[in-house]
Length: 220
Image 1 (cartoon, rainbow, N blue to C red):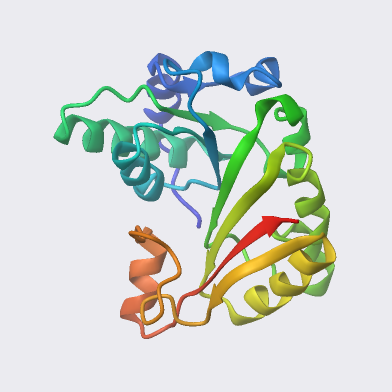
Image 2 (cartoon, rainbow, N blue to C red):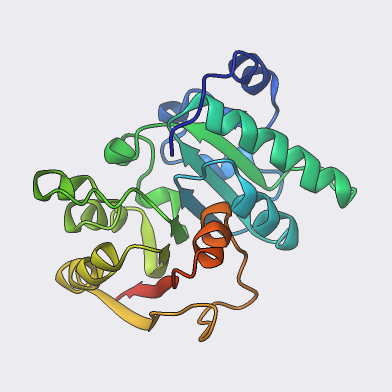
């Protein structure tokens, strides 16, 4: 998703208590940033405007969340969404961290000691052209990276509107040694997630009559 530059985003992010601008410094020690260090860590790759992660995190205060995106404007909107949702629930946002980084280089900021238990990938860029497919967040090349910091039996939750991306991803997961424990070609008719939280894209595509594809994969 393209988004206009927002001059307020960078200053607001830098002033935020739950934004990290230097994620490389916390490789192997992300749990130290959270108030409840013993809680499991879940990760969203490509958080966009933060509608999904803010609502997920506020409902699950016994889990710590890291949300990554590359665009300041997106992260600025995510930061505001987190603040709004937590304020509505009279809760301090102490179980969520936003950070800016290129997901293709994720092994520069995460490792085995970070013990990520679950990854969420929602409506990522489908990169339809053959020469660009290795950029897909579910491509085999990326999945092999995630295995470096996922715990044993760690999971990936994936949602998309794109048929080709979904069908290709089924092959990527199997090729990378993941077990697909649940999948659907119509999430809103056959939900495989407990208390599914709609993303902005999900609502838009559903209103257009496009079925949402989803899967849960686990490291064997």
